[in-house]
Image 1 (tube, rainbow, N blue to C red):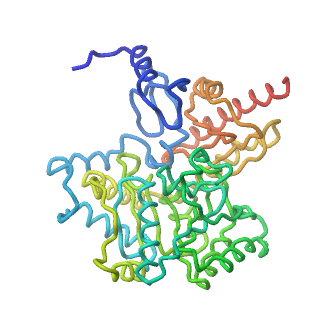
Image 2: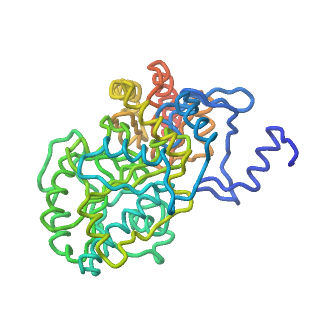
Image 3: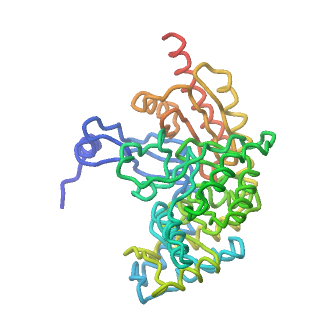
Length: 437
């Protein structure tokens, strides 16, 4: 047994040995030790309480220590925690598939249960590529991609990040090349202009014979820029994909399960993708699980080639514990007044973040559903800004120029008010500093 560490020793060991997301071992960012989490509150070792503005990167939509999900996990672990999915199946996976088929549009009938969002997108890409191989058109192996997007951290998904401004430009010489168009130019809520479809129209017209699919994050571009675009773009994109016989892949890893104000972001446009990826909030933020769903047409065509085998099979796919958590999370979401909660959060974010609009250094404030974004004109210094949020009693994790909020759906209105008040105070501090400089 390793020795029990006090908080100072724990943090020192962490700094020396643990690699955190997007961090440097030579210049590690400060990490804050969590002792407990319940509802929308994180409690640090030492007793500091923080209102959670991040839902653990979109996932903990019900907050923490959720009785229904914990009960499902305890019940399943008494039977078995994991079995391989090759040649075996189990009730939690089958019951989850039933729920997902009922929850998503009717054409989506076939489900691959992956173990992370990046892998769900990898599977979607393989589905699209194998579909065209089965149709005798293997040359259709490129993707049409929107700039400003983010689809994961594996090599196939890194190739879908913005080639100039994406977080993975370091690897650009090792990644396959795809066809990019500018992000949709008409923001959510603005007046629609049909000319905004010209880049996609031209790309599909010129390159459809090379394209397996168009992949996009519907309506909400997440980690690539937290940008919200007009749902009509999605409608027109669906029609263009049909016209040029290009598959449409919707990456709803971040937006699924109500975050944008609709159960799926595709619902803002009434659009059904050929392949749909979901994850993050699927298990209510308890265990890693994701899913890739596709249509009968894609699955049948893919399965007609050779052995008909979809070439993917993670060791922990369809993990019974994760499936049990997902079943409980979905049931809880559908029983809850989630839509009203998201609307209430949206109203609170609009009121609370409004003062930032007039501050020096702020480029734009954007709100949609339970997502609030303050985009700064310059990138923030994370080591400098993070302690200021802690002082305000809120947990916010900016990146680049973006200070953004996506709290659990169970957060109370007064907590949303405190959360936004903390953001306004910190942004004001940075604005005053910028003015002095």
